[in-house]
Length: 470
Image 1 (cartoon, helix red, strand yellow):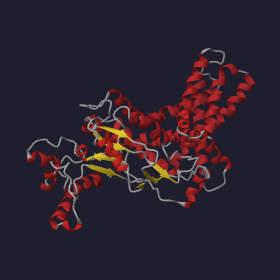
Image 2 (cartoon, helix red, strand yellow):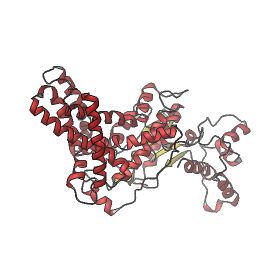
Image 3 (cartoon, helix red, strand yellow):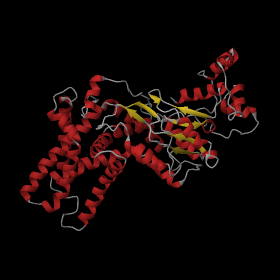
Image 4 (cartoon, helix red, strand yellow):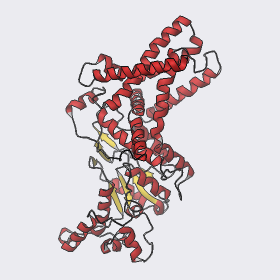
């Protein structure tokens, strides 16, 4: 995708050489013709224009139902995180729906000097392209009859596979390569060079596209995103350590938190394994109910859950939307976050190469029917289902066994917090339990996956017994 965008960037320089470019994915379409005019209000504002690199619109989708069990709208990102980052240096390039300044993508100051050799070493050997560098703010209007064979030949040359050899394209110029999240990498590097962005979210959606409406594609897409983000976070391009950088410190912290987001799977696995095992074997982890510190503990936990709920209620979403968003987040942390992080580590160790798998957003009546019904479609890879099923079965077993133990020992004071936490995990995991036990349709969790998850959970129970009681 980065290579294709760079080709379009070069070819368009010989045709129109417009100073501002609309970047749009193939599954997105324009829903309002005034989006360009709205973005130009920022690009042409003399107070911010010199450092404004792009104006980012949110991704909004049609055919998203009220329940939205997969959080296809990515509500936390578009309605909370990006408006917050707009108060710093603005959101990073988010794949699509943005008007970006051509000059920003060229990576180096256009008035780099009159050294023709130096410009060609950076941008390539095309005389027409080098000539266009000094005419960015003098766009050309070309009618069809004016497309001479010479111009078409030049455009073909700029689009050739060998044009970038020995140049800075993909490294210092254009969209950056060597990442499956080329948009994020390019955006962070541009912000480190001093460019900022603006987040624009008008009431009427400016662009609409197709949402992912089945679990398999959602997790595959998430795995690619998390692998790419973590690769940035563990490289020299991490916003927190990148140097030299003109990025604001608070924006560095915010951006670094985003690229290290995939590591959330570590705490997710810890909380899904250690507390339930301790509950089963009668080992208290949290403050006793009679302990005054229990109130502080309960307040931190409850307020962290209610914060997201309040964010969604403020923007007009329902409590059901909060429940579904929280459920899919927990599912993603133990599936695509973990797989994406593992994929990144393997790439770093040279055990495999990064790959880009396009997300299938074509409509599938059989898969979409479960989405419309507000049910999960668990027809996905064992790579996702087994860890998910294992943790759910482990928590269910430990909850039943732990409650039975507490009833016998009457140790309510010490174990109540763990019981409530485990019950909370089970509520969030109910769609998985339903898919393994109660559902009989094609979208259920397969019997083989359930059996394999049961075996793995028995291994964890055995390990817990030997480690905690011996």
